[in-house]
Length: 123
Image 1 (cartoon, rainbow, N blue to C red):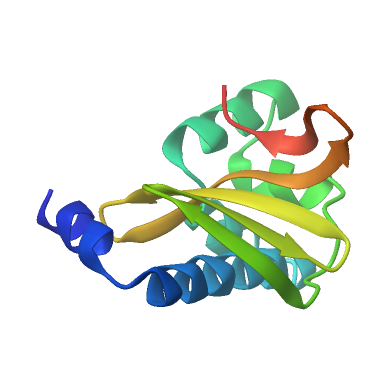
Image 2 (cartoon, rainbow, N blue to C red):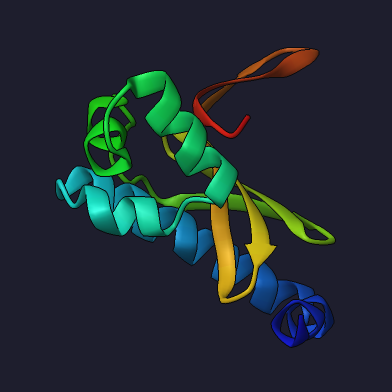
């Protein structure tokens, strides 16, 4: 609980940089074929949904999800305990957990006024 409280008190720029760094590390792990490292950066509900929908362990399912490679981080928006990181070719959504930012959804593309369409998302 203390970590969440501290994360909420960090300056917005620091929190945005940390969220963007997590998104890039996550996509880099996928691109490098390190499914275990990528899954360690997923929110628990997202990892569970990925295993359930992929009918295989998270480390295999995340590599088979067809996520784009790590692009350069562009605009990052932080809303309380949530963040949206727009990268070249992808948008990643994150939330704070004990230990830092975790990926809630990835492989997301905008659909105008409708919600993003995400390849990987929690249930």
